[in-house]
Image (cartoon, rainbow, N blue to C red; front, side):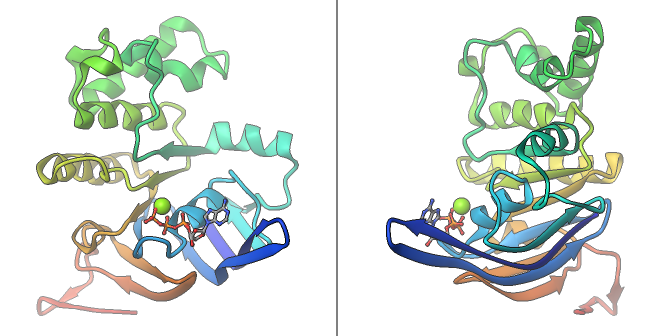
Length: 239
Ligand SMILES: Nc1ncnc2c1ncn2[C@@H]1O[C@H](COP(=O)(O)OP(=O)(O)OP(=O)(O)O)[C@@H](O)[C@H]1O
Ligand SMILES: [Mg+2]
């Protein structure tokens, strides 16, 4: 589903070049839910933005469903992103002047889907994330956890092949964090959507099927967790 091959990334500021990712290699299977774990500044968001096609790596290849997104032209890439990629941000990024339902529908407006179908899909997804009664409210009338549910529904409406989430619970208290992670886990189970979730919390990462750990721009470990079915005598099998 997703393959990152020998990706290196540097940022240029004037004459200065800072290398932030070094020869990263990993792959994620269709339907998997994995965590990208690491402390602040380790390169998690940079890696996620590269995989979501929001910027191009200095070197290497990134394949999504066998398409090398590094080689794609900007036009083709924006179309590919709209169709195949969903994104959930820490700060929700909802449009304040639109209602909850209109926010969820928005990605389909860009795909010229008819209003009645948009509405029907948006309402079904709001039901799925547990806030069907909030459809006609505005984002400012919702709690943080409810706003994140809206942004999850919005990311799903195009039925993307993969959803990237950058610290989706970073702004939430621990009880709400648990609720949001459970919603993502359930969606992954039910809809078989592939999820890549950035987090700096081990307790969040451990609920995913595998954990990729970044440290100072290097991928240091790849670990299978007990959330995967491969348990033997209660002990974790690492690969
Ligand atoms: N546009 C940029 N220009 C220069 N350096 C950058 C830029 N964006 C990120 N960096 C640097 O790249 C490194 C990795 O940043 P990144 O945002 O990927 O880390 P992160 O793991 O997501 O951290 P956090 O947990 O704090 O969000 C940091 O040292 C950061 O200063
Ligand atoms: Mg980050």
